[in-house]
Length: 249
Image 1 (cartoon, helix red, strand yellow):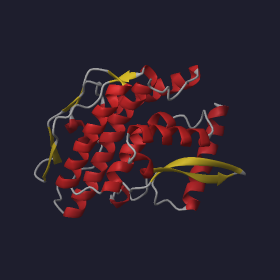
Image 2: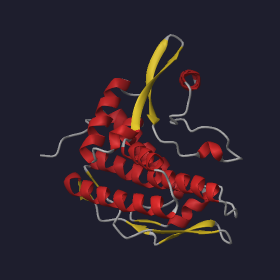
Image 3: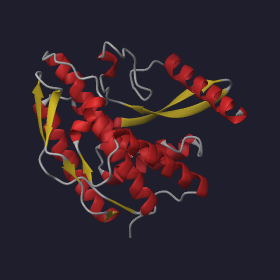
């Protein structure tokens, strides 16, 4: 019998449905087909052919592909107990400095909606092929790739930080990731942040997506494992402030 991974309250269901809609609107795609050229506007691609830039943009491309497509599919699986899964069509990635930068082919298609026991093997197979493509063709590091995969697959839990205790989200996401693939939990941890006399664990990737290397965005992601404790505490303080301001409006 397939475990029931999240028993959602009506408010949590509504929140995940809204998050799903917002995530899908980022790329304006449906769940049946993802044209990877749509990712071009997400990344500030340049015409440079320097190897370090190819590595940086490759890691970011892997991150955005996983978070903006596999993440929403995972939310759908939790909400509906079924969801499309990426098919296993081999992915070819080429660096072409005379165009946008990366050329990816073919478009990624998804299967019809699958229940969890069939969805998981399909996702595992796709991740294996995707890792092979990004690591061999763009030299994206193992930690960068699998940290993005872990964040994407844990998205139903990370989206509920305003609804549940962090310890519950941490243990639930860890059990889920272990069930999916026992490689995944090692790439996502929950670090404790402190502000205003409160403590909260926040999701934290173990492998860096290299966003900080971008000259136009020289800062770390919110989930970056490179963040120092003071940065994490300040981020938590900002969240508390924004929550207070939202409550007043």
